[in-house]
Image: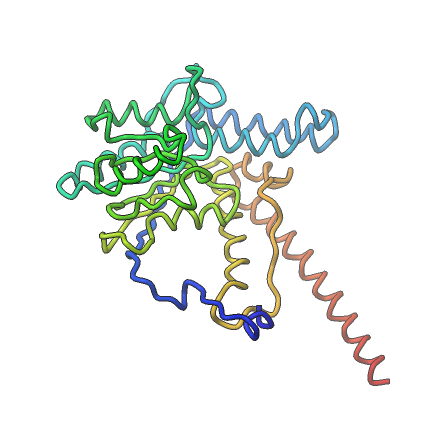
Length: 317
C-alpha cells in the first residue's frame, strides 16, 4: 500500500469525510432454546466423527457442520420445520424491533432493511424465515404492501420501482440477502434502521450491508444497526471471525501508514477444537484454544527473529 500510494491517487473513507448519518450499533444477544442446545451438542459428535475420519467427506464434513451451525443459530425450524416457534428467538426479537421502529416513525414514513442470507423465500411452500417475518409483521398490524422481499423484484425494471417505493416510504420494510440487496441498492433516503439477522461469510458483505444505510442522501442524522446473535451457538464465533478479518483489511486500507506486518485469518469454517469449546459452553476452554494459537504464533516469530539474526551476522562477516 505504501508503494501504491506513491504512484496512485487514492482516497479512503476516512479521508473523504462524507455527510453520512451517525450509526448506533446495537447487539441483541438471545438465549438458545433447549432444542438449539441439543442440536449444538449433536454437532460436536459429528465433528468428532469427522476428525477421527469415521465418515467420508461426501457424507459429512466441517463445512457442512458449520453451515448447519449457522442454521441452528438463526432458527431451530430450519433444521426441523415441525419444531415449535418459541418466543425469545432472534427472529422474534427482530420482528419486535422492526415493528416498534415502524410504529414510532409512522409520521416520517421511515424505512428499514432486514438482511438474511439464509432461508430465502421459496415457491414450493416450504418453511422460510422471510415468509415467517412478513407474516408476523402483518399480524402485528403492518400493511402487507409495506413489507417486501428483494427477491420479488426479478427484473431491473421491478427493482427500480421497488427502490423508488422504499425511498418514498411506500415500502417501509425491505427484506433481502446481501447478494441481492447489497451493491447497487440505492434506498437510503428514509432508512432509519438496518437489521443483520445472520452473519455473512465475508467482511465485504458486512461492509455492503452497512453501506446501504451509512450513505450520502440519507435524510436521517442518526440511524441504528441491529445485529442479532444466539448465545451458545456458532453465531458469536462467526461474528468474531468476520470482525477479525475486517480488522486485518483495515490495517491495509487506511489513509494512515499501513502496518509493517498484518495478521491473517483462516476461512469461516470452525475446526474441531473450536466446536468443542462452543458446545461445552465453558469460556476457559475457548480461552485455552486461543492461547494455544497465540503460543504457536510466538514460536514462529521467535524462529523468524533468530534466523534474521543469523542472516545479519553472516552479512557483517
